[in-house]
Amino acid sequence: MSPTMSASPPSPDTSRAAAAPSVNALSERLVARLIDDAARLGVVISHTAGGTVIADAGVEAPGSIDAGVLIARICMGGLGRVAVHSNFDAAPLWPTMIEARTSSPVLACLGSQYAGWSLAATKEQTGGKKFFSLGSGPARALAVKEPLFAELGYRDRHERGVLVLEVDRMPPQVIIDKVLHDCGLAPEGLTLIVTPTHSVAGTVQVVARVVEVALHKTHVLGVPLDEVVEGAGSAPLPPPAPDGIRAMGRTNDAILYGGRVHLTVRRDDTARRLAESLPAANSRDYGRPFADIFTSFNFDFYQIDPALFAPAEVWVSSLESGATYHGGRLESALLQDQWGGKPVAP
Image 1 (cartoon, rainbow, N blue to C red):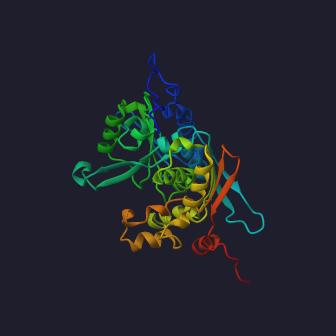
Image 2: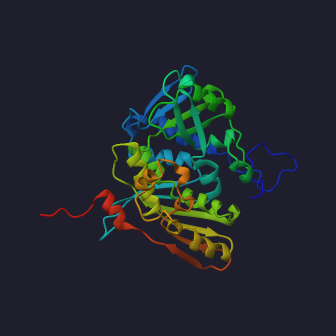
């Protein structure tokens, strides 16, 4: 993809797409809503001595589904819609579904939502336990620490930023200082949102990545990202899990075996290719609960077949031909076996 997405101030000879939106500016009103409605959403707000805002959405705070929906929208840089849909029709896949859609799929999903920033500190640096978290959300585009941003040709510039941390403890000051430095922000210009995967809000915001997972797999397949112009998807919201490993397994299963995505692309050959190659069923590791797969590889993500990380079922529509192609399948029996939902015997 050519470097046409920069949100830097335009120069006199700026290109046609140099006015790409600032994901941090667009998400500001959503961050303000999270802070203003914190009590209703089950979120606890605190501030560091320097003025950085810390929003606890599941470490000590209870969080909520509504908080998770709002955080998912923040993660998408204000460029996506996320909603909860209840389905009690005959034989539903699952009674509660998370839906996401965006008309800016590359920027919303890969330029903002993707959990691509690794943040780590040793126990010596923290003065206690070592710390690790993946960072997602708009502030990634301020720091641009990932090679992905060179491919996207996008760098945001804004005086305020927000980052979501998928971790079960509050970030130590050394991590906060690193984020501030790399993003070029004053302490009061940063908001950090903490969402453990096993929390209610954390589960929602991970499952809301169903379209992002499809975009990332598209990128892995080597399909030019500017081919994708629209994205929508849904996935079941898993029941609560008592620990991080089981929560990670359930949120992955929700997408790998219950996620459905509809992409609109420019060319017909791209639509055909994605319908065939995108679904998770193309992976050699497909067909087992994700927690079992993860355990079998000694908890090493890099041993898992990358082709597994994809939605279960896809529809891909072509602007060129007007045709829509379908691939993949749902594995409702696997989800039912893992999550329950079977009738109780009298």
